[in-house]
Image (cartoon, rainbow, N blue to C red; front, side):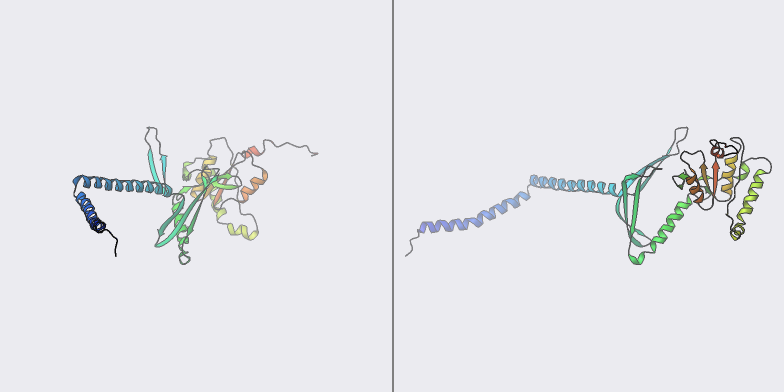
Length: 292
């Protein structure tokens, strides 16, 4: 015999039946709210805010990414007396890892910068560039380096490159200069032609020196007051022969016998050495007596 109260059973049944009705009512109210213009406007503004927030984050990320991958260099050159100037902007690959495609071959480029040490001449930090590609495409490096060499030599084509000692080695000094014609330097009658003919004869007799074991070098001593055209003529002569010019000043501080010998033995090929202030080597020489 059941002891449940019939009223209780009926009440619970009504509650169970009312639960789905409440759920349906809530769903209906929510759907009706979608048709509310105020709700739609608020929902639209929220969506626009999310989109703009995403765009703002994307632009920030893109700006940081580009700053890491690109360096904007401003080079001010050609400043004239009238105040005008020309400005050039260059975008180059920044430090980090990059990917590029050269002649159909993908390669990885890693540019690293050493901020602990600087180049003494330019003041720029030392950098290392590492190129990586598949083993089957390794020959592309030779083509890339050859093209880079040709582009670098294009700036020196038809110009005179001047080098000076830096420590114990020769390094380019300044930008390549325009060659000066030989006839633009005026010397005493016959001197310029005699030197030019002697140099041409020396260049054509290289094998003669080799066969006899004689050092293949030739020297000229030019003397005269300052401004008489000695250095100018040597520069013009080097330009006409398509040779580089190495400047060496004997009055340079710290230039000893060992350093001088090393520099003269490591002169770059196809170069003329111009030794200036030769008399500086004799200013401090002490004359000794016949007894020593």
